[in-house]
Length: 198
Ligand SMILES: Cc1cc2nc3c(=O)[nH]c(=O)nc-3n(C[C@H](O)[C@H](O)[C@H](O)COP(=O)(O)O)c2cc1C
Image (cartoon, rainbow, N blue to C red):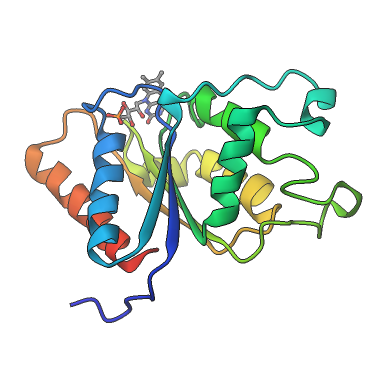
């Protein structure tokens, strides 16, 4: 029994995998989280970045100018959310390009932070986040040898910078060719987190 169940929350799930194929583990993890969250009465929205047409950000002028309509819609989802779950595969040590484009487009000055008070001007306070990363290497190697750098950059340079916290993380390593039993354990863990709304 979950003894730390929270009151229902508004949760935004961002699926950062560029490949919308349901075969991808990341989508399975997202669905497992949704199952648990729905069961516990949380309200959900999902952004599947592989299905959206987020343009690359090409200049400072574009960053400081009006956001494209699709980006504005994503910003509204962030404003709505009390908790944000981002799920992505580690690609060449980092987030896939589609997620990087999303981050650059959405976390704009004026919306996400006050450009005049950079260090203290985070405008998305009051929201928490969880980063869920899958990878080919063992999780322990990612933390010890690679210092979990994509997680740290995402947490410190983006989410904490704009006021989002606490930021927790879940890492699933050695996912390629994992047994059905192992995948079940990961899916169950996501359902548990979804139920808790964390
Ligand atoms: C383009 C690409 C780059 C990758 N880079 C890494 C990497 O740097 N480190 C790593 O451990 N795994 C890497 N992998 C393995 C993926 O992280 C792994 O296939 C993915 O997490 C599996 O989840 P999925 O089924 O949702 O795609 C890479 C895979 C691809 C396709």
